[in-house]
Image 1 (cartoon, helix red, strand yellow):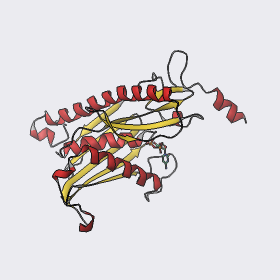
Image 2: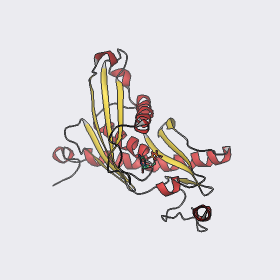
Image 3: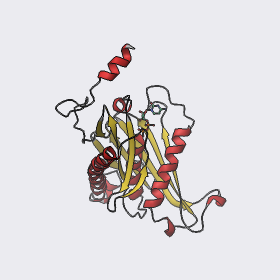
Image 4: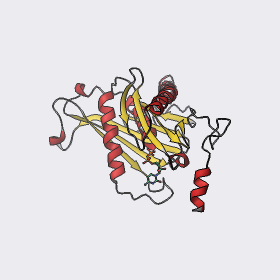
Length: 255
Ligand code: CDP
């Protein structure tokens, strides 16, 4: 009972418009992106988004095995989202659970919209993403990181995929919710990803309910935040490919 009273009192956005971690309602957590961190892969990326840390490696287009899973019309996109055992406060069972399978499925569907798969029949494009540390928003951090890795692999895409999770906590619409906000009693969580140039939505999930007015506010805030994420993705790619070849092969790091 005492805990419930405390929850009811939690003010997720104060009178000055600041959240508990000091951000404004439309501010995303700090994002760092480094391209080309797994030399064995065709393309790779490491991304930090607040406390979230994810690494993506991409292989392909390559032979699609077993052969009966190949398509004569297009490349098959296989996306694997996994959380490291040590990436959550409780030990994460290393066996992929329903959540890992669901996130992998919706993310591979997003990439099927982005990649020109029809140019690579009978092949597979394998995208592996490992979450090393987490604090809500990992499916979007993973997708954002994977999009940069796919671009680094030189796989032609209509556009990068960029996203953010928008939602509601304490009655206020906020972008890029952290775990504490996601656990608010009235929390609504909406991970969203788009192809930024056309604004085509390629991933949209929703946990909770919003009124139409709230949804329009959330969508507007999400699109603004996604523009910032998109710029950071492009800057990271430019940072690698504007370097001399030796540095580019070393993930943009000049030694
Ligand atoms: O990470 P995302 O917000 O995309 O997905 P979620 O299912 O809403 O999970 C929110 C957060 O819960 C994750 O980012 C993790 O920090 C945490 N989590 C956990 O502690 N243990 C799990 N087995 C899965 C998620």
